[in-house]
Image (cartoon, helix red, strand yellow):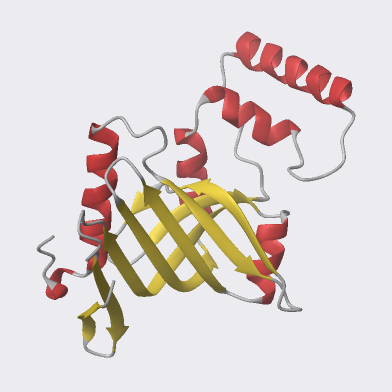
Length: 197
């Protein structure tokens, strides 16, 4: 890996995701997204990265979930990307904030139509009556087909913007001398140092 610290680690992370996509990794942009609630209890779930920016990573989420409640109580998060096919992983630590409404609507419009329907009818993580959920989903799907218009972005759907302050890029080596590059953001930009495997 020949990452220039001046470029920052997110460019390398984006390249790794593209390489995972090219080698048919089943979920190249998936990451474990870890939050901590107001009482210090951690919680993790797998999410899909929507965009890699110059300085931030962008996800989308319902804003009523445990993840969103945790973020409101404590904006510090950790992410872990893992590509076993490539022998690589990336660990990201930083803070997260809810993005503006226009970005949320843009990301929602990019979702697969079935995902949009599910988002509108399902309160993720709430107890449900499965039959009622299926009826609601069917009614909304029929309405969307008749009106030839997909559902609109719910008001409580948002974009989550993670601003990293540390990124570790880990590459496996057959001799167990794995390459670990830790990038830390300071007032003058990113600094990089190698860590022991």
